Amino acid sequence: MIKVEHLTKQYGDRYAVNDISFEVKKGEIVGFLGPNGAGKSTTMNILTGYLSSTSGKAMVDGLDILEHPLAVKKKVGFLPETPPLYLEMTVKEYLNFIYDLKKCTLNRKEHILEVCKVVKIEDTMNRMIKNLSKGYRQRVGIAGAIIGNPEVIIFDEPTNGLDPKQIIDIRNLIRELGKERTIILSTHILSEVKAVCDRILIINEGKIVADELTENIEGALRGNRRLAIRIEGPSSSVLSSIKKIAGVIYADISVEHEDGSATFIVESKNNVDLRKPIFYMLAKNSWPILSLEFTGANLEDIFISVVDEADAEATVGKK
Amino acid sequence: MLAIFKREMRAYFTSPVGYMFCAIFYAVSGFLFMLNTVQAGESANYASYFSILLFLFIVIIPLLTMKLVSEERKMKTDQLIMTAPVTLFDIVMGKYLAALTMFGSAFLSSSILYYIPLAIYGKPNAGLYIGCVIGVFLVGSAFISIGIFISSLTENQFISAFGTIGAIIFLLFVSALNSFINNEAIRNFLNGLSITTRYTYFSNGILRYDSLLYFISLSAVFLFFTVRVFERRRWSKS
Image 1 (cartoon, chains in turn cyan, green):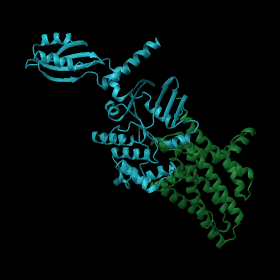
Image 2: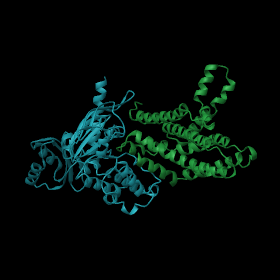
Image 3: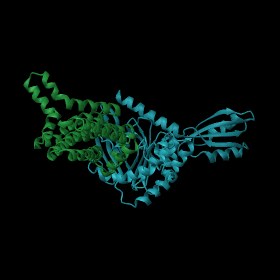
Image 4: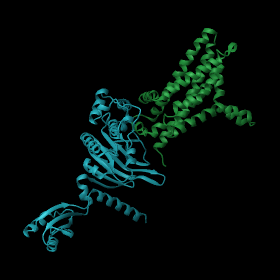
C-alpha cells in the first residue's frame, strides 16, 4: 500500500531523513518510534505531500506522490502533530469544510454524522472548536483525517498531551480504524506502539534502525532472556544448582530476603526457555518457588540500546 | 477552490474583520463622497471622490488580506489545506476571490448607491462614472493580490498588515518622488511603477488596454508569487 524507497530530506548539511526505505502492507498498523527530532514527522509530511523529499520515492497504492499529488492526497488522511483546526468554526462547519475540501461524494449528512459517532464527538457538533478541551480537539482532528474514508491514515503523535483515559480511548479508536484501513502512527511512547501496532519501525537521526513485528521486537532485539526467581532454600547451594542447568549463561543472587528466601537473576540465550528445567530441579530439592518473572530489558531498554548502538556506529563510521 | 472561498467568506463574518471592513468602508466613503459632491456646491466632482478613495485602501485592504495566509501558517492549518486534494493555485485563488468579493461588493454597492443622488440633482457623465468605478476596482484588486503575497511571507498578521500598508503607500506616492529627481531614466522607471499614473486614464474616462493589462497582470504576478512561496516552503532546504 505504501512504499518508500531511499527517501532523503536534507536541510542544509543536516539530514532530517536519510535514505529511508520501507513498505507498509494493506491493512497493517505500523508505528514509527523514535526520539524527538528523529525524522518521524518529516517522513509523514513527505508521505502526505506537505513537504517534498530531496531525493527518493514515496508511493501510495502504486502512485508517486510527486507525480500524482492529487490522487495520492485523496487516498491519505492526515492528522499532523498539531491538529489543524480553525478555532472560530464549529465542529460541524469544520467537518463540512473538510468534506468540501476533499471533494467527497458520499452522502454529506450521513457521512459526517457517522464520522462523529466513530470518534464520539456527536454531542459537540455545534460547539466552537476554540471552546473544546484538548482531548476533544484531538478527536475533531482525527475526524477530519478520516472524512472521505481514506484508505491510508497517517497520525503524527495522536495521543500527545492527552490524559491517560483519553489516551486509552484514542488507542482503541485507532485499533478500531485499523481493522479496515492502513495506518501509520508516530510516537515516542513505547507502550503505545506495543498496544496498537502490528509492526514497529524505530527511527533515529533520520535512519531506520529497526523494523520488526511487534510480537518479535522484544525478542529480536534483546540478546538474552532474563528471569527473576524468588526461591526459598539455602541460597549458595540453590545458586550452584541453577548454574549447573544446561543453557544458563549467567546466574547470581540479587536480593537476600529476611524470610530466608532469595531472589536470583538467571540469564539464558534468547531461544532457550529455562522455566521448566529450573522448576523440576527446584522441586526435586524441595526448594519452593515464591515468584518467577521475566525482567530486565523491556521496550524502553531495547529502544535506548538500539538508539545508542546506532549512535555509536555513526560515530565509529565518522572516524 | 470553492471550499476555500466559502471558508474565507465565513471567516470574515465570524470575526470582527468583515464588519469592521464594511463599517469603515461605508462610513469613510460616504463622508468623502458628501465632501466632494454635496458640500462642494457648484463644482461637484465625483472624479476627485474616486481619486481620494484610493487612499482609503491604505487602511482597508490590509484589513482584508493580513490574515489570509499568515494565520494558516501560525495555526498550522496550512498542513490541512496543503495535504488535501487541491492545488496550490486553487488555495491562493480561493483566498483572492474571497477578499475580492468582500471589497467588490462593498465598493460596487456604494458606487451604485452614490450615483442615485448624482442622477437626481445633476447630469453626471455615466461613461466617466463607470470608468472611475472600473479604475478603482482594478487598483483595489491589484492591492489585494499584493496583500496576499505579503501575508504569505510571514506568520505574523501585524507584520503582514504593516508590510501591505507600506507597499500600498509606496505605489500610491511613488510618482510624487519624481519632483525631487532630475535623472530622466529613474523618473520614467518610477512612473512605470506608479499606480496613480495608470489610474488617471480611467478617471479621465479613457479605457486604455495597456492600463487594463497593467492592473490585471499586476494581480496575476503577485498571485503567482504567492503560489511560488507555498511551493518554495514545500521544497525548502533550510
